[in-house]
Image 1 (cartoon, one colour):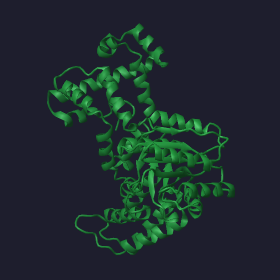
Image 2 (cartoon, helix red, strand yellow):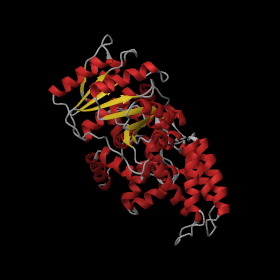
Image 3 (cartoon, helix red, strand yellow):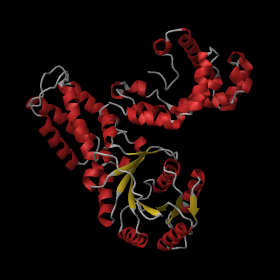
Image 4 (cartoon, one colour):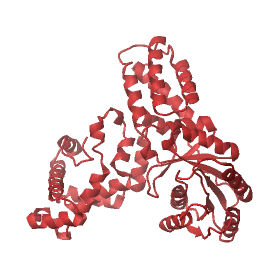
Length: 453
């Protein structure tokens, strides 16, 4: 997300380096480039105009403080305004009501409502320890009810049964009554969508809203539709008392126009962003952190949070002790490291949060291919326990069997064996002296695909 915008802004701000003051002239030239960058990112025109005017007003003639360069001074102004446009602070779900707290999900068909219900249910259950029930009022889309049941089972929350011959209002009312008797904390209500906004859909969801009186009404929208996402959100906001927006499919959106447009056009906060199909791929939306990522400064806070939450610390400590004792780095160890990385959203997700990624060439970024990691794990899974523990036994016939078992070529296995050997040597170097710094020097150009920098 934001790749193209981040790259364009990075190039623009570089042009200010070496100048001792922000002047009308260099601000004017820079703002022209920033405007083009925002428009290319599919940010809504009214938002672009407001943003440019605010930045110009704050930056014009500003003295460069201390050791700051004009570029750094402008970055501060741009960062502040990006944060302001996207809503200043993260806004949590409001569940402060007599249980059950009802959350109604609205949006067009294909935006990812049902998947988001599953993700939100898991988040509420695991992070807030809530007792969650989900119900589908979508009686139009084939298999919509079955899809939500499958998701509910996968995240281990209560699913309220419904059928396509019931009316949405009857389903929601029955679910609410059941939630009260079962002492449910949060009831998530999935609704039907259409391919486009129509009167029938709006009338139905308005009646549904009136019947269950939700404390939160979230509009779920596909971020890849750009400024259309903001316009659609506004149309729903005019019909319903929306309390927030969920942006989905942000992993496929390189522009980020929706994230920059939604808050200003609708007046509603973005509460969550979804990136991927996995049920843990839902993050709170932090405007300041997103602004930092847009400007290539990374999102270290979110990165640290992910490591803290998703890394198996017992396994990490066990691995560290094993390396300290000078034991061999085998394929069991390599697979565990790949699995830990996958749990944190994969290499691409990690790189997106690291500072300075906008300065890394696309060729290097493209090596952050999680598909390569999956191949490596498949090859390791195709080995016997003995082969994983003693890589030296991997010879001709064994290699053919392992590659065939993983559905890959022997060349793929040879590449993995070579990469493992290089990593094993690095681990030994680190233990002999020089620590992490020495290991990092040895890593240049020798990491597996997706790990090379």
